[in-house]
Image (spheres, rainbow, N blue to C red):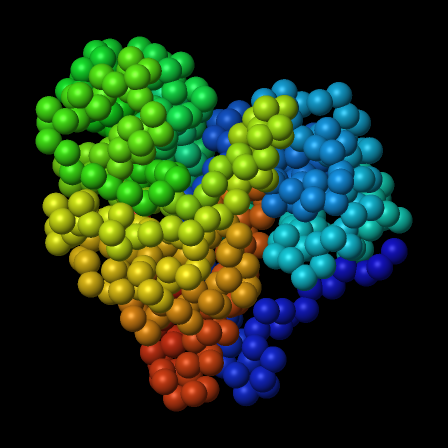
Length: 469
Protein backbone atom coordinates (compact mmCIF):
# COMPACT_ATOMS: atom_id res chain seq x y z
CA UNK A 1 0.00 0.00 0.00
CA UNK A 2 1.22 3.49 -0.86
CA UNK A 3 1.46 5.88 2.11
CA UNK A 4 -0.82 8.92 2.24
CA UNK A 5 0.99 12.08 3.31
CA UNK A 6 -0.41 15.61 3.08
CA UNK A 7 2.47 18.01 2.52
CA UNK A 8 2.20 21.05 4.79
CA UNK A 9 3.07 23.36 1.87
CA UNK A 10 0.59 21.88 -0.60
CA UNK A 11 -0.94 24.47 -2.95
CA UNK A 12 1.39 27.23 -1.69
CA UNK A 13 3.69 29.05 -4.16
CA UNK A 14 6.82 27.22 -5.28
CA UNK A 15 9.09 30.27 -4.98
CA UNK A 16 10.73 30.00 -1.50
CA UNK A 17 10.44 33.68 -0.57
CA UNK A 18 6.79 33.92 -1.66
CA UNK A 19 6.01 30.61 -0.01
CA UNK A 20 7.34 31.90 3.30
CA UNK A 21 4.89 34.81 3.19
CA UNK A 22 2.04 32.46 2.19
CA UNK A 23 2.88 30.13 5.11
CA UNK A 24 2.69 33.08 7.49
CA UNK A 25 -0.67 34.22 6.13
CA UNK A 26 -2.11 30.71 6.00
CA UNK A 27 -1.14 30.06 9.64
CA UNK A 28 -3.28 33.05 10.62
CA UNK A 29 -6.44 31.73 8.92
CA UNK A 30 -6.14 27.93 8.93
CA UNK A 31 -8.05 27.57 12.19
CA UNK A 32 -10.76 30.17 11.55
CA UNK A 33 -14.40 28.99 11.64
CA UNK A 34 -16.01 27.76 8.45
CA UNK A 35 -18.84 29.84 7.04
CA UNK A 36 -20.70 27.82 4.41
CA UNK A 37 -23.57 30.03 3.20
CA UNK A 38 -24.22 28.30 -0.13
CA UNK A 39 -24.41 24.52 -0.31
CA UNK A 40 -26.57 21.51 -0.99
CA UNK A 41 -26.02 19.08 1.86
CA UNK A 42 -29.02 17.15 3.17
CA UNK A 43 -30.64 18.75 6.26
CA UNK A 44 -32.00 15.31 7.21
CA UNK A 45 -28.47 14.38 8.28
CA UNK A 46 -28.48 17.02 11.00
CA UNK A 47 -32.14 16.60 11.92
CA UNK A 48 -31.88 12.87 12.63
CA UNK A 49 -28.17 12.73 13.46
CA UNK A 50 -28.31 9.14 12.28
CA UNK A 51 -24.99 7.45 11.45
CA UNK A 52 -23.88 6.89 7.91
CA UNK A 53 -23.27 3.23 7.24
CA UNK A 54 -20.42 3.04 4.74
CA UNK A 55 -17.96 4.96 2.59
CA UNK A 56 -19.91 4.49 -0.62
CA UNK A 57 -23.11 5.95 0.79
CA UNK A 58 -21.28 8.91 2.28
CA UNK A 59 -18.46 9.78 -0.10
CA UNK A 60 -19.13 8.30 -3.53
CA UNK A 61 -22.82 7.98 -4.38
CA UNK A 62 -23.77 11.65 -3.64
CA UNK A 63 -20.73 13.29 -5.26
CA UNK A 64 -21.09 14.01 -8.98
CA UNK A 65 -17.54 15.40 -9.06
CA UNK A 66 -16.35 11.83 -8.47
CA UNK A 67 -18.67 9.67 -10.49
CA UNK A 68 -18.80 11.91 -13.58
CA UNK A 69 -15.07 11.22 -14.09
CA UNK A 70 -15.59 7.47 -13.89
CA UNK A 71 -18.61 7.70 -16.17
CA UNK A 72 -16.45 9.48 -18.76
CA UNK A 73 -14.24 6.36 -18.78
CA UNK A 74 -17.12 3.96 -19.31
CA UNK A 75 -18.06 3.06 -15.73
CA UNK A 76 -21.84 2.88 -15.34
CA UNK A 77 -23.47 4.78 -12.48
CA UNK A 78 -25.23 1.66 -11.19
CA UNK A 79 -21.81 0.10 -10.55
CA UNK A 80 -21.04 3.08 -8.31
CA UNK A 81 -24.34 2.85 -6.37
CA UNK A 82 -25.54 6.21 -7.71
CA UNK A 83 -29.32 6.52 -7.16
CA UNK A 84 -31.82 6.39 -10.01
CA UNK A 85 -34.38 9.15 -9.44
CA UNK A 86 -33.63 9.01 -5.72
CA UNK A 87 -33.75 5.21 -5.44
CA UNK A 88 -30.46 3.42 -4.70
CA UNK A 89 -29.66 0.56 -7.08
CA UNK A 90 -29.14 -3.00 -5.88
CA UNK A 91 -25.37 -2.59 -5.78
CA UNK A 92 -23.09 -3.95 -3.07
CA UNK A 93 -21.48 -0.86 -1.48
CA UNK A 94 -18.16 -2.66 -1.07
CA UNK A 95 -18.07 -3.60 -4.75
CA UNK A 96 -18.90 -0.01 -5.70
CA UNK A 97 -16.03 1.20 -3.52
CA UNK A 98 -13.65 -1.33 -5.07
CA UNK A 99 -14.63 -0.06 -8.50
CA UNK A 100 -13.98 3.51 -7.36
CA UNK A 101 -10.59 2.53 -5.92
CA UNK A 102 -9.60 0.76 -9.13
CA UNK A 103 -9.96 4.03 -11.04
CA UNK A 104 -8.13 6.41 -8.71
CA UNK A 105 -5.52 7.15 -11.37
CA UNK A 106 -8.21 9.10 -13.24
CA UNK A 107 -8.21 11.78 -10.55
CA UNK A 108 -4.51 12.67 -10.72
CA UNK A 109 -4.14 16.44 -11.00
CA UNK A 110 -7.80 17.16 -10.15
CA UNK A 111 -9.24 19.00 -7.14
CA UNK A 112 -11.31 15.90 -6.38
CA UNK A 113 -8.09 14.06 -5.58
CA UNK A 114 -6.99 16.86 -3.25
CA UNK A 115 -10.35 16.90 -1.46
CA UNK A 116 -10.51 13.10 -1.12
CA UNK A 117 -6.96 12.81 0.23
CA UNK A 118 -7.80 15.52 2.79
CA UNK A 119 -10.94 13.64 3.87
CA UNK A 120 -9.16 10.30 4.15
CA UNK A 121 -6.18 11.70 6.09
CA UNK A 122 -7.62 14.55 8.15
CA UNK A 123 -11.14 13.29 8.86
CA UNK A 124 -10.63 9.52 9.04
CA UNK A 125 -6.97 9.37 10.05
CA UNK A 126 -5.91 7.05 7.22
CA UNK A 127 -2.23 6.79 6.30
CA UNK A 128 -2.55 4.90 3.01
CA UNK A 129 -3.79 6.16 -0.35
CA UNK A 130 -6.94 4.72 -1.87
CA UNK A 131 -5.97 2.16 -4.50
CA UNK A 132 -7.04 -1.35 -5.56
CA UNK A 133 -4.80 -2.97 -2.93
CA UNK A 134 -6.14 -0.75 -0.14
CA UNK A 135 -9.83 -0.57 -1.11
CA UNK A 136 -11.10 -3.04 1.49
CA UNK A 137 -8.86 -1.67 4.23
CA UNK A 138 -10.07 1.89 3.61
CA UNK A 139 -13.71 0.78 3.33
CA UNK A 140 -13.54 -1.12 6.63
CA UNK A 141 -11.61 1.63 8.40
CA UNK A 142 -14.20 4.24 7.39
CA UNK A 143 -17.06 1.92 8.30
CA UNK A 144 -15.63 1.38 11.78
CA UNK A 145 -15.26 5.13 12.32
CA UNK A 146 -18.80 5.84 11.10
CA UNK A 147 -20.17 3.45 13.71
CA UNK A 148 -18.84 5.66 16.53
CA UNK A 149 -20.58 8.73 18.03
CA UNK A 150 -17.66 10.98 17.02
CA UNK A 151 -18.57 10.50 13.36
CA UNK A 152 -22.26 11.32 13.57
CA UNK A 153 -23.28 14.34 11.46
CA UNK A 154 -23.61 16.79 14.35
CA UNK A 155 -20.30 15.74 15.92
CA UNK A 156 -18.46 16.22 12.64
CA UNK A 157 -20.18 19.58 12.14
CA UNK A 158 -18.71 20.71 15.46
CA UNK A 159 -15.32 19.12 14.81
CA UNK A 160 -15.04 20.92 11.47
CA UNK A 161 -15.58 24.26 13.21
CA UNK A 162 -18.59 25.16 11.10
CA UNK A 163 -20.10 28.46 12.20
CA UNK A 164 -23.00 28.29 9.72
CA UNK A 165 -24.12 25.81 7.08
CA UNK A 166 -26.81 26.70 4.53
CA UNK A 167 -28.70 23.98 2.70
CA UNK A 168 -30.94 24.58 -0.32
CA UNK A 169 -34.64 23.69 -0.54
CA UNK A 170 -37.20 24.25 -3.28
CA UNK A 171 -40.04 26.74 -2.83
CA UNK A 172 -42.46 23.81 -3.08
CA UNK A 173 -40.72 21.65 -0.46
CA UNK A 174 -41.59 21.46 3.24
CA UNK A 175 -39.00 22.55 5.76
CA UNK A 176 -39.62 19.75 8.23
CA UNK A 177 -35.96 18.86 8.77
CA UNK A 178 -35.10 22.46 9.59
CA UNK A 179 -37.98 22.57 12.06
CA UNK A 180 -36.60 19.44 13.73
CA UNK A 181 -33.14 20.98 13.99
CA UNK A 182 -34.50 24.18 15.52
CA UNK A 183 -36.63 22.23 18.01
CA UNK A 184 -33.65 20.15 19.18
CA UNK A 185 -31.19 21.04 21.92
CA UNK A 186 -28.30 21.09 19.42
CA UNK A 187 -26.62 24.47 18.95
CA UNK A 188 -25.36 23.91 15.39
CA UNK A 189 -26.55 26.62 13.00
CA UNK A 190 -28.04 25.01 9.89
CA UNK A 191 -30.24 27.28 7.79
CA UNK A 192 -32.10 26.91 4.53
CA UNK A 193 -31.93 28.83 1.23
CA UNK A 194 -34.89 29.70 -1.00
CA UNK A 195 -34.54 27.95 -4.39
CA UNK A 196 -37.70 28.64 -6.45
CA UNK A 197 -36.47 27.28 -9.80
CA UNK A 198 -39.00 24.43 -10.05
CA UNK A 199 -41.94 26.86 -9.82
CA UNK A 200 -40.32 29.53 -12.02
CA UNK A 201 -38.93 27.46 -14.87
CA UNK A 202 -41.81 26.34 -17.09
CA UNK A 203 -39.35 24.01 -18.86
CA UNK A 204 -38.71 22.11 -15.63
CA UNK A 205 -40.14 18.60 -15.85
CA UNK A 206 -41.76 19.00 -12.41
CA UNK A 207 -43.14 22.50 -13.00
CA UNK A 208 -46.88 21.78 -12.78
CA UNK A 209 -46.50 19.29 -9.93
CA UNK A 210 -44.27 21.69 -8.00
CA UNK A 211 -46.66 24.59 -8.65
CA UNK A 212 -49.55 22.60 -7.15
CA UNK A 213 -47.50 21.84 -4.03
CA UNK A 214 -46.43 25.49 -3.87
CA UNK A 215 -50.09 26.60 -3.94
CA UNK A 216 -51.04 24.09 -1.25
CA UNK A 217 -48.23 25.18 1.06
CA UNK A 218 -49.04 28.88 0.76
CA UNK A 219 -52.83 28.80 0.43
CA UNK A 220 -52.58 31.35 -2.38
CA UNK A 221 -54.38 31.28 -5.72
CA UNK A 222 -51.42 30.92 -8.06
CA UNK A 223 -53.61 31.01 -11.17
CA UNK A 224 -53.32 34.81 -11.14
CA UNK A 225 -50.10 36.78 -11.38
CA UNK A 226 -50.94 38.62 -8.16
CA UNK A 227 -51.59 35.37 -6.32
CA UNK A 228 -48.43 33.80 -7.71
CA UNK A 229 -46.27 36.66 -6.42
CA UNK A 230 -48.10 36.60 -3.10
CA UNK A 231 -47.28 32.90 -2.77
CA UNK A 232 -43.59 33.65 -3.23
CA UNK A 233 -43.71 36.35 -0.57
CA UNK A 234 -45.43 33.99 1.86
CA UNK A 235 -43.01 31.17 1.16
CA UNK A 236 -40.00 33.45 1.52
CA UNK A 237 -41.31 34.39 4.96
CA UNK A 238 -41.43 30.68 5.85
CA UNK A 239 -37.82 30.30 4.74
CA UNK A 240 -36.71 33.35 6.71
CA UNK A 241 -38.34 31.82 9.77
CA UNK A 242 -36.17 28.75 9.12
CA UNK A 243 -33.06 30.93 9.19
CA UNK A 244 -32.66 31.72 5.50
CA UNK A 245 -30.79 34.88 4.60
CA UNK A 246 -30.47 34.15 0.87
CA UNK A 247 -32.23 32.99 -2.27
CA UNK A 248 -30.64 30.92 -5.03
CA UNK A 249 -31.45 31.01 -8.75
CA UNK A 250 -29.94 28.54 -11.20
CA UNK A 251 -31.29 29.89 -14.48
CA UNK A 252 -29.97 28.88 -17.91
CA UNK A 253 -29.09 32.52 -18.63
CA UNK A 254 -28.70 35.78 -16.72
CA UNK A 255 -31.49 37.45 -18.68
CA UNK A 256 -33.80 39.80 -16.76
CA UNK A 257 -36.93 41.68 -17.84
CA UNK A 258 -39.10 44.54 -16.60
CA UNK A 259 -42.59 43.98 -18.00
CA UNK A 260 -45.75 45.88 -17.17
CA UNK A 261 -48.32 44.24 -14.92
CA UNK A 262 -50.72 43.47 -17.82
CA UNK A 263 -47.84 41.93 -19.78
CA UNK A 264 -46.94 39.79 -16.77
CA UNK A 265 -50.52 38.59 -16.35
CA UNK A 266 -50.79 37.69 -20.04
CA UNK A 267 -47.47 35.85 -19.92
CA UNK A 268 -48.50 33.90 -16.82
CA UNK A 269 -51.77 32.82 -18.40
CA UNK A 270 -49.90 31.55 -21.48
CA UNK A 271 -47.60 29.57 -19.21
CA UNK A 272 -50.45 28.04 -17.21
CA UNK A 273 -52.43 27.12 -20.32
CA UNK A 274 -49.48 25.40 -21.95
CA UNK A 275 -49.70 27.74 -24.96
CA UNK A 276 -46.14 28.89 -24.55
CA UNK A 277 -42.85 28.14 -26.20
CA UNK A 278 -39.22 28.41 -25.18
CA UNK A 279 -39.26 32.21 -25.58
CA UNK A 280 -42.09 32.60 -23.06
CA UNK A 281 -40.40 30.25 -20.61
CA UNK A 282 -37.23 32.34 -20.85
CA UNK A 283 -39.23 35.56 -20.45
CA UNK A 284 -40.89 34.25 -17.30
CA UNK A 285 -37.53 33.38 -15.78
CA UNK A 286 -36.22 36.82 -16.76
CA UNK A 287 -39.17 38.67 -15.27
CA UNK A 288 -39.04 36.67 -12.05
CA UNK A 289 -35.44 37.65 -11.41
CA UNK A 290 -36.55 41.27 -11.39
CA UNK A 291 -39.55 40.42 -9.21
CA UNK A 292 -37.26 38.58 -6.78
CA UNK A 293 -34.95 41.60 -6.64
CA UNK A 294 -37.94 43.72 -5.59
CA UNK A 295 -38.87 41.15 -2.94
CA UNK A 296 -35.27 41.08 -1.67
CA UNK A 297 -35.41 44.82 -1.12
CA UNK A 298 -38.61 44.25 0.89
CA UNK A 299 -37.42 41.35 3.06
CA UNK A 300 -33.62 41.67 3.04
CA UNK A 301 -32.85 38.31 1.43
CA UNK A 302 -29.58 38.18 -0.52
CA UNK A 303 -29.97 37.02 -4.14
CA UNK A 304 -27.59 34.53 -5.73
CA UNK A 305 -27.62 34.03 -9.50
CA UNK A 306 -25.54 31.31 -11.09
CA UNK A 307 -26.48 30.99 -14.76
CA UNK A 308 -24.72 29.36 -17.67
CA UNK A 309 -25.08 25.65 -16.97
CA UNK A 310 -26.59 23.64 -19.80
CA UNK A 311 -28.22 21.23 -17.41
CA UNK A 312 -28.88 17.55 -18.05
CA UNK A 313 -27.03 17.65 -21.36
CA UNK A 314 -26.98 13.83 -21.49
CA UNK A 315 -30.65 13.18 -22.24
CA UNK A 316 -30.57 9.36 -21.86
CA UNK A 317 -28.79 9.66 -18.51
CA UNK A 318 -31.31 12.26 -17.37
CA UNK A 319 -34.12 9.88 -18.31
CA UNK A 320 -32.56 6.91 -16.51
CA UNK A 321 -31.16 8.58 -13.37
CA UNK A 322 -32.66 12.08 -13.05
CA UNK A 323 -31.13 15.49 -12.46
CA UNK A 324 -27.70 16.36 -11.12
CA UNK A 325 -25.81 13.34 -12.37
CA UNK A 326 -22.70 15.06 -13.67
CA UNK A 327 -24.01 15.94 -17.14
CA UNK A 328 -24.34 19.70 -16.64
CA UNK A 329 -22.03 21.51 -19.09
CA UNK A 330 -20.97 25.20 -19.03
CA UNK A 331 -21.92 27.53 -21.86
CA UNK A 332 -21.19 31.15 -22.84
CA UNK A 333 -23.12 33.70 -20.78
CA UNK A 334 -23.96 37.38 -21.26
CA UNK A 335 -24.28 39.58 -18.19
CA UNK A 336 -23.99 43.20 -19.35
CA UNK A 337 -27.12 43.31 -21.51
CA UNK A 338 -28.91 40.47 -19.74
CA UNK A 339 -28.88 42.26 -16.38
CA UNK A 340 -29.66 45.72 -17.75
CA UNK A 341 -33.44 45.65 -17.00
CA UNK A 342 -32.92 44.56 -13.38
CA UNK A 343 -30.02 46.95 -12.82
CA UNK A 344 -32.00 49.76 -14.42
CA UNK A 345 -34.51 49.45 -11.58
CA UNK A 346 -32.41 48.32 -8.63
CA UNK A 347 -28.71 48.52 -9.50
CA UNK A 348 -28.13 51.63 -7.39
CA UNK A 349 -30.16 50.47 -4.39
CA UNK A 350 -27.84 49.38 -1.59
CA UNK A 351 -30.67 47.48 0.07
CA UNK A 352 -30.25 44.82 -2.62
CA UNK A 353 -27.32 42.40 -2.66
CA UNK A 354 -27.06 40.30 -5.82
CA UNK A 355 -24.17 37.82 -5.89
CA UNK A 356 -23.17 36.80 -9.41
CA UNK A 357 -21.53 33.48 -10.26
CA UNK A 358 -20.31 32.30 -13.63
CA UNK A 359 -19.16 29.19 -15.45
CA UNK A 360 -17.96 31.36 -18.34
CA UNK A 361 -14.51 32.56 -17.32
CA UNK A 362 -14.26 34.80 -20.38
CA UNK A 363 -16.67 37.16 -18.62
CA UNK A 364 -14.50 37.71 -15.52
CA UNK A 365 -12.48 40.68 -16.78
CA UNK A 366 -14.76 41.78 -19.61
CA UNK A 367 -18.15 41.87 -17.84
CA UNK A 368 -18.35 40.71 -14.23
CA UNK A 369 -15.50 42.66 -12.64
CA UNK A 370 -16.51 45.94 -14.34
CA UNK A 371 -20.15 45.42 -13.34
CA UNK A 372 -19.33 44.62 -9.70
CA UNK A 373 -16.78 47.41 -9.70
CA UNK A 374 -19.55 49.90 -10.46
CA UNK A 375 -23.03 48.83 -9.29
CA UNK A 376 -23.57 49.09 -5.51
CA UNK A 377 -25.88 46.07 -5.43
CA UNK A 378 -23.48 43.59 -7.08
CA UNK A 379 -20.93 41.22 -5.58
CA UNK A 380 -18.90 38.52 -7.29
CA UNK A 381 -19.33 34.97 -6.07
CA UNK A 382 -16.20 32.81 -5.95
CA UNK A 383 -14.91 30.53 -8.69
CA UNK A 384 -17.68 27.98 -8.95
CA UNK A 385 -18.26 24.34 -9.86
CA UNK A 386 -15.83 23.41 -12.65
CA UNK A 387 -13.60 26.30 -11.58
CA UNK A 388 -13.68 25.51 -7.82
CA UNK A 389 -10.08 24.37 -8.20
CA UNK A 390 -6.57 25.68 -7.54
CA UNK A 391 -6.09 27.07 -11.04
CA UNK A 392 -9.72 28.25 -11.25
CA UNK A 393 -9.37 30.21 -8.02
CA UNK A 394 -6.14 31.80 -9.22
CA UNK A 395 -7.70 32.80 -12.54
CA UNK A 396 -10.65 34.34 -10.70
CA UNK A 397 -8.43 36.49 -8.46
CA UNK A 398 -6.10 37.52 -11.28
CA UNK A 399 -8.88 38.49 -13.67
CA UNK A 400 -11.18 40.35 -11.26
CA UNK A 401 -9.11 41.94 -8.50
CA UNK A 402 -7.60 44.80 -10.49
CA UNK A 403 -11.06 46.03 -11.55
CA UNK A 404 -13.39 45.01 -8.72
CA UNK A 405 -10.93 44.75 -5.84
CA UNK A 406 -11.35 42.23 -3.03
CA UNK A 407 -14.28 43.87 -1.26
CA UNK A 408 -16.67 43.57 -4.20
CA UNK A 409 -16.42 39.78 -3.89
CA UNK A 410 -18.40 37.54 -1.55
CA UNK A 411 -15.53 35.53 -0.12
CA UNK A 412 -15.56 31.76 -0.50
CA UNK A 413 -18.43 29.27 -0.41
CA UNK A 414 -18.10 25.57 -1.11
CA UNK A 415 -21.35 24.84 -3.03
CA UNK A 416 -21.19 21.12 -2.27
CA UNK A 417 -23.41 18.13 -1.59
CA UNK A 418 -20.45 16.25 -0.10
CA UNK A 419 -20.46 17.19 3.59
CA UNK A 420 -17.04 15.79 4.46
CA UNK A 421 -15.39 17.75 1.66
CA UNK A 422 -16.38 21.09 3.21
CA UNK A 423 -13.24 21.54 5.37
CA UNK A 424 -11.10 20.33 2.46
CA UNK A 425 -12.60 22.88 0.10
CA UNK A 426 -12.24 25.76 2.54
CA UNK A 427 -8.65 24.73 3.28
CA UNK A 428 -7.88 24.75 -0.46
CA UNK A 429 -9.41 28.21 -0.88
CA UNK A 430 -7.47 29.60 2.08
CA UNK A 431 -4.19 28.22 0.79
CA UNK A 432 -4.76 29.58 -2.72
CA UNK A 433 -5.86 33.01 -1.49
CA UNK A 434 -2.89 33.25 0.86
CA UNK A 435 -0.63 32.33 -2.04
CA UNK A 436 -2.18 35.06 -4.18
CA UNK A 437 -1.78 37.63 -1.42
CA UNK A 438 1.83 36.50 -0.91
CA UNK A 439 2.55 37.13 -4.59
CA UNK A 440 1.25 40.69 -4.25
CA UNK A 441 3.43 41.19 -1.17
CA UNK A 442 6.50 39.74 -2.93
CA UNK A 443 5.92 42.09 -5.88
CA UNK A 444 5.52 45.04 -3.48
CA UNK A 445 1.96 45.63 -4.71
CA UNK A 446 0.60 45.04 -1.20
CA UNK A 447 2.17 45.47 2.20
CA UNK A 448 2.43 42.52 4.55
CA UNK A 449 0.17 44.32 7.01
CA UNK A 450 -2.50 44.74 4.34
CA UNK A 451 -2.22 41.07 3.40
CA UNK A 452 -2.59 40.13 7.06
CA UNK A 453 -5.84 42.13 7.17
CA UNK A 454 -7.11 40.64 3.91
CA UNK A 455 -6.47 36.96 4.63
CA UNK A 456 -9.23 36.57 7.28
CA UNK A 457 -11.55 38.70 5.18
CA UNK A 458 -11.20 36.31 2.24
CA UNK A 459 -11.57 33.29 4.52
CA UNK A 460 -14.68 34.32 6.48
CA UNK A 461 -15.26 38.06 6.82
CA UNK A 462 -16.50 38.83 3.31
CA UNK A 463 -18.92 35.88 3.35
CA UNK A 464 -20.38 36.92 6.71
CA UNK A 465 -21.14 40.38 5.40
CA UNK A 466 -22.24 39.36 1.92
CA UNK A 467 -24.83 36.93 3.30
CA UNK A 468 -25.84 39.24 6.17
CA UNK A 469 -24.80 36.80 8.85
